[in-house]
Every structure is written in C-alpha cells, then in structure tokens.
Length: 353
Image 1 (cartoon, one colour):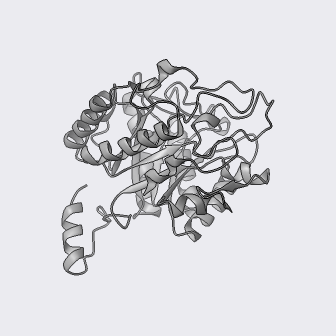
Image 2 (cartoon, helix red, strand yellow; image 1 turned 90 degrees about the vertical axis):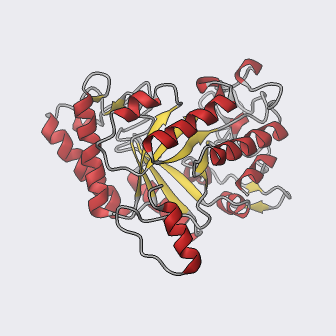
Image 3 (tube, helix red, strand yellow; image 1 turned 45 degrees about the vertical axis):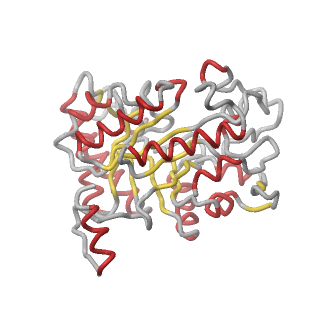
C-alpha cells in the first residue's frame, strides 16, 4: 500500500495524480468485496435462473452487486478443451462486468486447465519449447490478454506455491527460472496496461514466507492468499496474525483471494462434494447452516480488515448443481454456493455490504 494513505488523504482535500508505479486505490472505498464467478457463463447457457433474498428473479450479477459486490474474479485458461474459461468467453464476460460498474480481476492460470499447488501444467502449445522461447511465449500471451482485456487486477498464475509452468518454473527446483517467467509476465503487464494492479497468489500461509522471500526482486502490487479451513487450518486468529505478518514484512497489499464455507452438508447432485464432514468445519462457531456460512464470511471480512488487508473474494458462489440431480459430473461445490438448492440467494450474500 505504498503511498495509499497519502493518496486517500489528498483526495479528501483536493485532487491527486498518483504515479504509474502507484496508481492509488482502484476501489471507491478502498476495500474489495469480490467473488469468483467463472462458471456463470456456463450456467447462463443452461438458462438457469436465480432469485434474490426477497425471492425475486434477477440475474446473478445484479443480485450480488445489489448486496455490495464490487469486483468479479474470472479464471482464464490458455487453450481449454471447450469454450469454458477461454479468452473469447472471458473477454465477453469481462465486458459485461464492466458494464455493471464492477471491477475485473483476471486470474490467469498459464495452463490449458486447472493450475494449483499440485499441478502447474505447461500449455500444450508450449511443450518442447526451450527456455528463451518459453519466456517469449509468456510475454506474448500476456500481451495478447491485455490487448483484449484491461483488468483492474491481474494474477500472474493461480496458487503458485511451488512456482509456475512446471518443470521450467518449479520454484523448489529452479527458482531463478521461476522468477524469470514471472518477470516476463509482469513486464508485459507494465508495458501494455500500466494501471493494472499485479498480484502473486499463494494458497494458505504455511509456506508463504518461503515463497515471498524469493519474489523480492519482482515489481508487483498485491499478495493474494487462499484460505479454506479444511486445507489451511481452522484457527482464524492464527490466520489473521499470519496475514498481518505478511502485510508488515513485505509491504504489499494483502487480500484473501479465495475462500468459501458450506451452508449445508447435504448435496443436490451425485457428484462427490469436497466438504461433507463436520471435521472440516470450524465448530461450534460456524456450523454448516445458512447463518453459519454468513457468520464465517462476516468474520473473514473483519479479520482481513484487522490484519491490514484490502478485501476478500468468495470462490464458487455461483457453482450450483447445474447438470441435473443425478449428475456425477456436476458440482462438487453446490453446498458452498451463495445460493441454496432452489437457487435463492443465501444470507451469506449480505457479507458483501
């Protein structure tokens, strides 16, 4: 948050022109209330409808923005097997988001499918390329993205705990190559969209210090942290302290880039859910109920503020059971959506206020 307080103070008394390296707060109140809604184009193609907390039919973006949502995160894959998360789909979706007055947060996986701490698979088109050619490809691909979309925030990779574009950029094996890949992407962003804020994304906080210590030469703005209690620990006080330590140590904006919580342990299709046991929850404080989900999200919002962070993003709030009640390839997340099994907005949406 370099000079952020200064910019805010000056804005109260007059007008300030923030420098290229510090474009100032991109959000009216300085706090990001986000949701990753990457599956929404797919759901809309199925003609599924949603209702707001009062039971009135409305489109999902309107329902959430009326509750205070100000940012939408979108996943981007390079050459996916279908249109889902393709550049064409994401470009059109980003335009719709902007037309609603919302900010665009682009999560670039640099892969043809899921990238996360357990897999950072090279796009098929880049397999066999030498390292210099790979750097050129990263730069050119990032530039192409920015010519189509000028996001308010861009993630260089998704949950890159052990690097990106394995094996070339595996951090534990080839740290210099990992940093070089990230640098190539960052330079493309600074060249083509200098006001876009750049985020590095780490899942959990356990190895965050090891990761961030190796990123000190990079020119980036934000640190995104994923937090799911069943994977990253159930002590919210300890998590808050870890966020505060990261904020103070690295002097970057810190945000919870992904989080979610169940409103039930029941299911609405035959696809195995990721969360289905009480041992995965923070009990007794946050049961798997609509009010428990809401209270968890309110606590998340409070703790990130108290840690000096700038916001949070709910992941999978739209990922209802979309493929029929007996589908085995539907949603493993419908009990953690922000809409119930009748597709009515849950009390948890009030956390965006």
